[in-house]
Amino acid sequence: MQVLLFGITREITSQDVLDIPASENLKDVGQLKAYLKQKYPGLGRLSSLAVAVNSAYANEDVQITCSDELALIPPVSGG
Image (cartoon, rainbow, N blue to C red):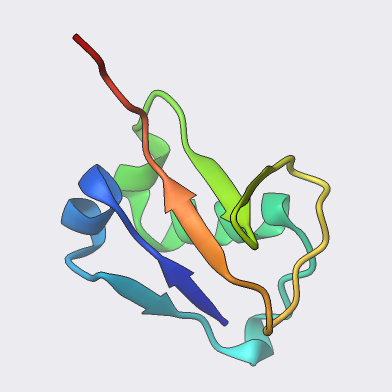
């Protein structure tokens, strides 16, 4: 499973893309976020962290598979 990273999430993980082994058996967005926050504690300190599944924002209960396009969307500040 691959997760695309942008902005501060890229800085926290020092990667553009995370490869998550299928053996982690992540079934939904909530499990994905919990896994990533455990592996990269800096992600847990963000004011918000959205996940996009196949280019659409997804709630915690949205099911995910290895073939989905996943992306972490960090908090955005505007001017």
